Length: 118
Picture: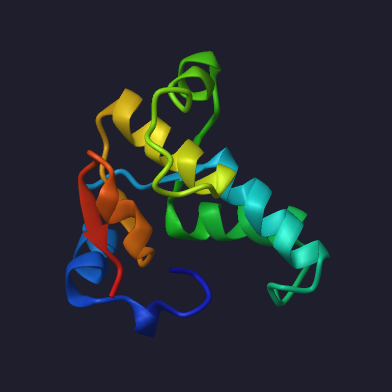
């Protein structure tokens, strides 16, 4: 969304640009960004610890923290997908009743509302 908005599909772009829709960024996503950046698997124009909060502020994105209900909601999820960050996003979406914007087809296997990013 921040690094390559031109890669977003029309539905995701419309949702993201709608000022009436509150956009959330999970702490799990920030955690994954920080790890991938540190490992050299994600190139950012500045350190993750400044890049992520700056882009959140610029884009009007709200922090979605991880709480106990989210952590425990991972347990009953089927093992369609083993990525712990993605499983947390799925659990948060289910607990909070919110959709997930993603380009990851593995999310299709879960009972969550999806907005395909492409």
